[in-house]
Image 1 (tube, rainbow, N blue to C red):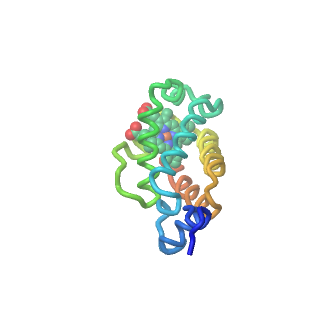
Image 2 (image 1 turned 90 degrees about the vertical axis):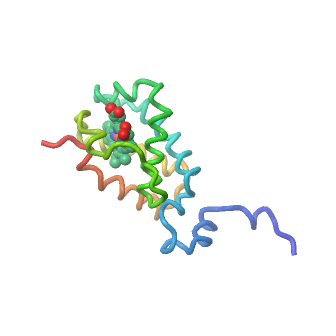
Length: 149
Ligand code: HEM
């Protein structure tokens, strides 16, 4: 019996089936693991660093306006996402309150970042179920990221 390239191609569906379907596999596995997540974060951070609405906050712009911050930030956001999605515990950064409290982020600025995350998941072809699960995780951190009072 011959096997075609089509039959051996690793698709998101094949990964889900091989790992026990949507119920058995972690979101991390269903997203495609560290290579897929790092690839998405690479695109996301480039977009965030040039997003005018996100950079309207001067404290955010002090960080996102400097291209020298991109590699380290991509590493930290990748590790955070891997861990938040149920992958290996590998995030070495600050918790979300400590990382953002000095930035005085508004609800609108949080929405602008969430929109870029959602757009990036769409751009990368992440299926709807995994898209919705990841965005639900992001939403759970709103109160830690947005300025209090
Ligand atoms: C749930 C949503 C968010 C997640 C998961 C997230 C994730 C992270 C991570 C992992 C770091 C690195 C922490 C460290 O340095 O130890 C960070 C820092 C940062 N984030 Fe976020 N972030 C979120 C929302 C936002 C929003 C809405 C903004 C801006 C509007 C923002 C702007 C920044 C900036 C400027 C830094 C660097 C702060 C500094 O080093 O002084 N983040 N974020």
